[in-house]
Amino acid sequence: MKTCVDENSQPKDTTIPVVGEAKIKNPIKFGRFVVEDDAVLVNISKRYMDKSAKSRKKVVHQYFESAGPRGKVYFDTSKTKCAVVTCGGLCPGLNDVIRAVVMTAYHQYNVPSVLGIQYGLAGFIPEYGYDVIELTPDYVSRIHEFGGTILGSSRGPQDPEDIVDALERMNVSILFMIGGDGTMRAASKVVAEISRRGLAISVVGLPKTIDNDINFASPSFGFDTAVETATTAIRGAHVEATGAPWGIGLVKVMGRHAGYIAAQSALSCQEVNFVLIPEDPFDIDGENGFLAALERRMHERGNSVIVVAEGAGQEHLEGSGKTDASGNVKLGDFALLLKERIIQYFKEKGVDPTLKYIDPSYIIRSVPANANDRIYCSFLGINAVHAGMSGRTGLVISRWNGRYVHIPMEEVTRCKKRISTCSNYWRAVLESTGQPISMRNDKS
Ligand code: F6P
Image (cartoon, rainbow, N blue to C red):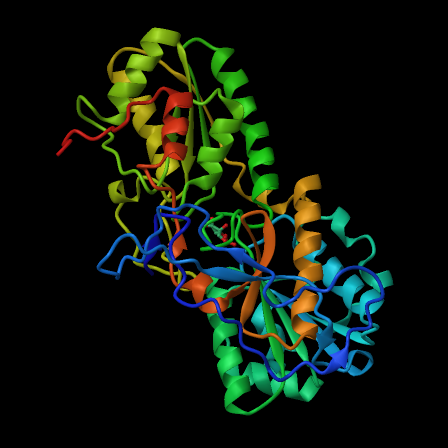
């Protein structure tokens, strides 16, 4: 998949499809309905010119549709059945989103039934034998207190035809799909199959990834909690590193293609001396390599904290060539290799380092959401229901430039978001760690 190193990469099209004309008065009694020209500017920076235009003076203003309730809805609310599914790896806030969807559907729109599909897309396929759960307000009232997802999750695609068959069998009008870019690609295929059959079923996506690498999800839900939890591990590593002679704390965090958790928690802690991310390749050996830089730091301060994103340094490992059920390449454990290399390096120099290796990866993504993420997830769930009831489909709910918006599914799956190593953000990380700007021997 392509990567966009710039969060503000231009969308190709911001139009949101509908399953039909909304003609029914919205039953919501309180608040303001969103009007169609109440849109959110995509790029607030003037720098974003029309790159295809000959004259660079032409500024292109693109807008995302605002999320929120519309004056008219498409579905006859009291006869509407919804379904929710959670796919892929866990992430803090999944239960909060489910809860918000159920509560809004029941209490705002009087929807009589919200079904929970178990264990990801597999839950649609009869052969797996997973029952659906009737999600009532009572059933979901306390689920936000727990990490994970009450529905369970799984990786891997299923045939869109089978999924639409299941939606037809269950008489579902609106499907809420919570998952990463793989899930959103699957959702696009489901939307296409629904349209091919001429059905009026809405599909609304809620983009989820602990790695924060989904395009136009800024940040993705659960990321704030992940950073907060990672900082606890990093603080532990710092205490350990400063509590022993030649102490080194090495923390591994998730981040397959993007090092956002590593970078953001380093910024938050200000106690990290090296952040290694997939976006910034480095040498291990050599005068300008990582080990030499670490040695300099150790001679200066006697201790060091290193945070490694799981996708960093993959070029130093032999790839297994294997992929997981989502089609992601299975990564090698670079942090463990680094641990061994650090110990060996210093031993050869006659020093016995006290290295503490901490891997909080699964702890970070399985905790309940923090206060910020709870609020964020709640708004995502609420706005997903508004979007679905209005008859919109093929969209995801996101927060952009401080507002909740509708983004076409194709835009979030078009490329992955990554840290630009030329950005002021990455410069701030380097300034906080004091690590060299580049740890490559070949600086060309
Ligand atoms: O969903 C992304 C992610 O959190 C990656 O950072 C990580 O590599 C992967 O999930 C691990 O998930 P699992 O072990 O469930 O496949």
